Image (tube, rainbow, N blue to C red; front, side):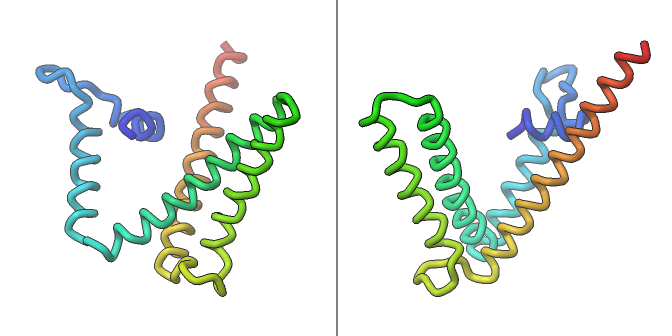
Length: 138
């Protein structure tokens, strides 16, 4: 988590001269954790529910990547089964008529994570483009 925040904001990568730790990043993560603890279930439940959806998407992606490697037929069937099960888990969370699907609070948390991810991706892309332009101009 600290490495990711340091990439998004270089100040988080600064190392404290005495302690030799990324003190700004550690402080930020500590404050974020304390805020989560103080807000309790109001924030922790939606975040963990969105985390379970993200795990299912990650599992589906891993199965799809393995499927594309074209292993033996039996292994491809297992990868396909993994994709189907993870797709069912994703749909279980997103379809509103399924018991246990996302509440409106969890949908807000999902939207917030998606927006944060898009902002980080565009910032990283912009930083990468600027870095590559400065190398070609030099």
